[in-house]
Length: 350
Ligand SMILES: O=C(O)c1ccc[n+]([C@@H]2O[C@H](COP(=O)([O-])O)[C@@H](O)[C@H]2O)c1
Ligand SMILES: Cc1cc2nc[nH]c2cc1C
Image 1 (cartoon, rainbow, N blue to C red):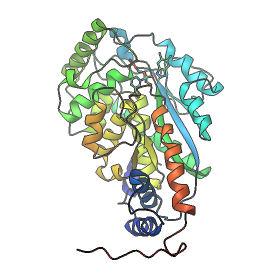
Image 2: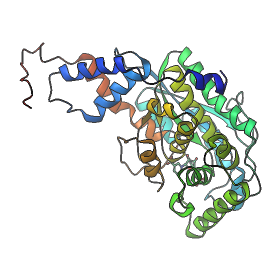
Image 3: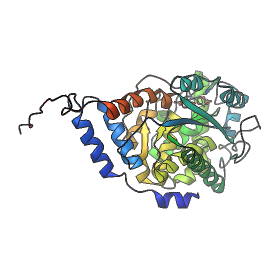
Image 4: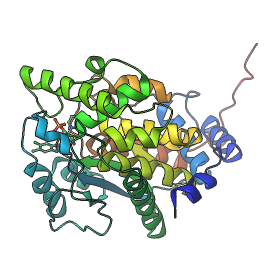
């Protein structure tokens, strides 16, 4: 499915399905609205799928793995080779997000969307061998940005066909908090300092180098904030693009896609700027400890469930939401109603 075809398919949420789901919650024998965001998320999922009959779904975490040319500027705590090592560990089940996923019956699928080297991870959807150094010119071409968006859309299409009904976004890419801060600073029109944090554990000097590199990348590339694909191409990354594609694909195909941490939030923001209707289809999970994450969620109008001071990436925060969702869906699906237990509700006095 091309990007253009995908965007043409995105419609508002199914309000009828949401009304039926809200009524079902209100009939359940418990204080009204007392399961808070559990209730809201289940109603949102009914709107996304167009079906108020929600069952516990086959679910997957897609980890978009890519390298970022900007690491040449000394903006990270570890070397670029870590991307490939962790990406391969996704295959053997040996990353933190893999361990968490096993706890909640989630299949983990790493995708090489643009790593600098080839690994055992499938490179079927690979766009290029890493991005260019954005302090010297655009990170990628516009055509590559579209190709990476379409790779994300394609993952959602395939997984839906295989019966997956709930997807978590994840990523692995040394340097991707630098690109994410650059994109966030441009799209939200906020200062680079405010949007930049320590990523995967950067020291004081490193943080200054990171801020300067982002400033330089923005100065050299002059991204237009009104052109989200242009911003993505100039100062973004393939990992961000792949996740943004997943959000657009989820919106077009009626599949709930869960936002993870900072990098995933930036991808969600790009998807929303490409297609404003798409944000209704995104599910917020947690607020990353990276300083800009809460500002991006606010700009998206999303309230996360988990305030856990996590900032690991890989999709770890997104899968952490799954047990919460499972509990909500189980109550929604199987709990007795007021009528079942012969309890009368009084009319609300106005
Ligand atoms: O998801 C987050 O909020 C998050 C915040 C900080 C770091 N990370 C992870 O750390 C890596 C990027 O950090 P860095 O410092 O290399 O830009 C990347 O692989 C992410 O998965 C992830
Ligand atoms: C080991 C390691 C694992 C990661 N997972 C996500 N980002 C990461 C960064 C590092 C350094």
